[in-house]
Length: 178
Ligand SMILES: CC(C)(COP(=O)(O)OP(=O)(O)OC[C@H]1O[C@@H](n2cnc3c(N)ncnc32)[C@H](O)[C@@H]1OP(=O)(O)O)[C@@H](O)C(=O)NCCC(=O)NCCS
Image (cartoon, rainbow, N blue to C red; front, side, top):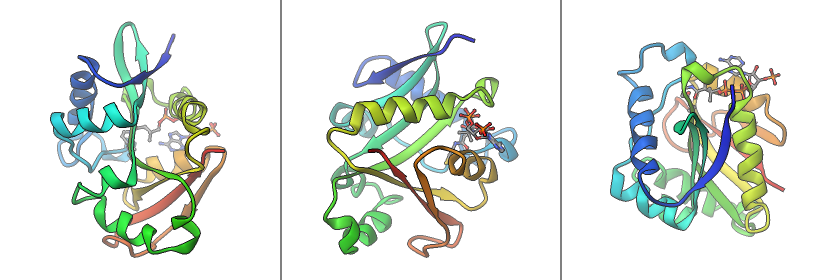
């Protein structure tokens, strides 16, 4: 299983990423026990995000099979899903004084899960961003047990469950990129 990693800034891969997102969105996802997505991003919003902060994508046989979308807090705060988290984090002295990225969404095609693709995507992402950002911070649904288990096994991740930032099913997970 040869998977290569790239930074996505523009072009037709944006549409490929959105097609992958569409397949794993709740409630249409086939098997929520293997993970699901909550954030639905429009094409123009995603193009704006990746132009500013390129996404990490995993590619197999020329197709996108996984990705991590990140954003600056300023751009993420324009999205109603992320704005409560951003507002809360900006109010914390410990966070406000650091440079940090919002972890918007991670996804790996079910056909490629369990082979370290998520781990490799984060490693690639960290290499690309550690010179500019000290941390990545995002939220994972408490109901997404597959994602929580996978993320909490990754190196440099710290989980902060039930922060109460958004609704009760969210957890905040912090990844230290340095
Ligand atoms: C959850 C998801 C991202 C995991 O991706 P993945 O490529 O399978 O993860 P990796 O293979 O890199 O695994 C990383 C670690 O998590 C573990 N892991 C992966 N999936 C797991 C699961 N469902 N249950 C328990 N552990 C899991 C792996 O065993 C590995 O740990 P190890 O090194 O000790 O063996 C992927 O299944 C997915 O995208 N699902 C659909 C969408 C989704 O839920 N996205 C996340 C939204 S927050």
